[in-house]
Length: 419
Image (tube, rainbow, N blue to C red; front, side, top):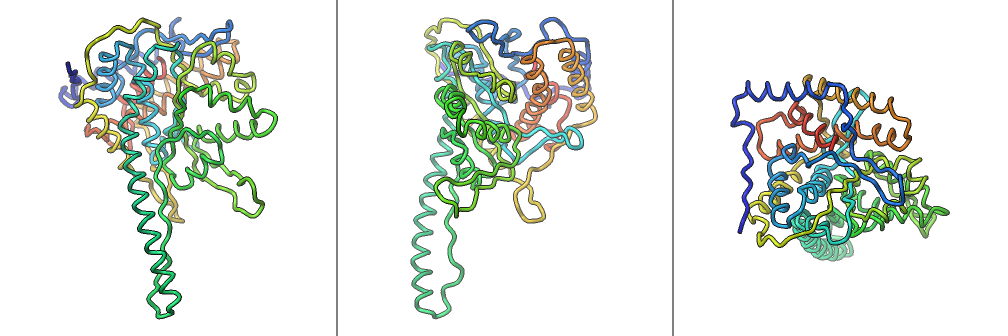
């Protein structure tokens, strides 16, 4: 039995009705915070991680293909939509990467980078849902690897011909051929040197998706007496798509690897008891823990549904990822890739301002350091989510200005951040 998404296109609604709806939603954001306004946040109140999620996942906040995928996966696997929606948001963020960056205000930016994790016990559908989301990206990656191997074969053949022409000294050598750069979209190698080598050739950025998030978090504690501190600092830079410089190991004569805008999104899953043991005080103090979007869906038994994930929905998701990959960088004065700047519409700015101030009220009323740290990061997360949703809507063919986040996208980003 196949499931096809009945998502309605926004442009089918009368513009004045849509505007009234959006203005009403923006007005709601400006209201005083309620008791349950707190976003999901890690708290070590016992040995078990407590991640509090306020009700059902707001699936209508997602763009069309992403919403369809989350609904189809949810119905096929018999699980909460967030199991597919969260990895889909992180994957979309990594596919957009450094090609786009939201300018919230002068000197205040939101890059397309997300770190997120599903906190759930074994057997709770974490892996099958993530596999369904990442399958098209894996297919695209395999195609790029085959293309790269073909380019390597051609390069090696051209190099032989070039070297022979140089020896003949007959003026036919021309320019020496350059080796092709590998195209990568994701990796499971968390070492900073390896990441920076990949990022040097792939300025768009990467998705780091380990089988278990414990592999990543445990790395910082494992090397705490050596490179753990510097690795943590470099990872924090990659969360904000800032520059990273790494000295190559094994030689004092090799040039360091420099990445002007290193962007790495992270998605994984972890069990609550393991998470509480792995997140150290240093992770909290450095702000690494506050950057993680942790979602702990309700635990339920999985029942056989007899349903498949719709092939048409999977194909639309595949095509959507390809559309995101068509986004290109701008170029600076040195012809180096640079982010194309996205801005907020005046109405979206007002919605974001109200949300920003509402978070400040929560921050001021709390005495919990961990909670305050997460709130501080959440303001930028809402802007990141709005940019991802808006760019996804644009690539899906909606009639929106691709470089101007509108009220609809901002409200969706805020709604997702609140969850």
